Image 1 (cartoon, rainbow, N blue to C red):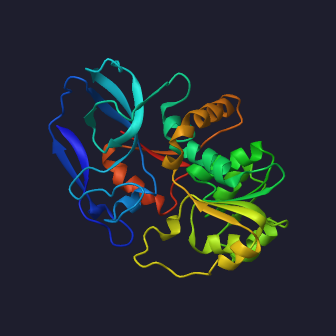
Image 2 (cartoon, rainbow, N blue to C red):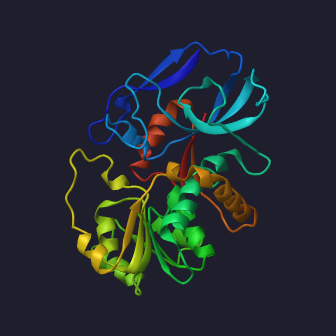
Image 3 (cartoon, rainbow, N blue to C red):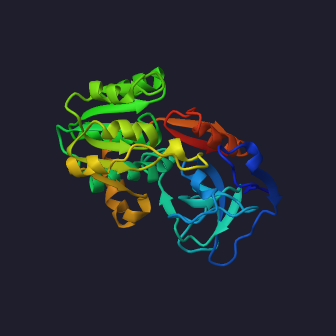
Length: 331
């Protein structure tokens, strides 16, 4: 039998294990033009929380009593499609199933000889692409500028920081523990870091770490940290709204400072984006990231949890900050 994970309830506030349901179905058989895939690695990401709500967004919501999906690395174990061979590895947006069939649309072949398979879910996957294109398309980052990154120890934030360092920026990261602050400085090249859980006043803490102000802020968390960053933004600053994990489990929209005055007075650009806005740029982005990785200019961290049955818990652990870098489940 084939194990699958379904969305049982739409969460109210923070998701729990009760919102997921394990089920079984017959192992599928590929038809002509299809391939049979075995799930190897599953990416769990904060944005999946938004898909659990029944509301319009940039990507359709999950349906109740249907399998969830995310970025997955899978092995082709049977092929009736001339474009794929048995033994090849692919990445793509796939269901939380141990086995599934696919026609091949939207799947990308990955080379395990060039990089570890998990890298294609992280630094060479949508994670790395998000960091690279967010900085390039919105941040317009220049050498010598001050780059502030929230969620700096996370999968996207750690790549953002390294790209900033490659480009010669002054680099400050925000994370949720002293251990994470030490790691972003030692492993990812950040010049300074702020533990938001122990800082009494984030506005002052950012001001102290960024004495020349903030030129580019790459935001992964939103909320009060965004407010504090905006209070330190420079003239012609750029704010890249990539994520807002601090708000994902809120049932009511919180009210914070109004930023219109800052945007106008300082001619600040603030722009949100999703990576699917830039699909045509994926190829060049992956090529650049691959080159940096090969040259030793990029590194990455992963938290790998083992067991298909642990996918929901790994997802929940994201909201407790239990991951170091990319959170991945090995099936």
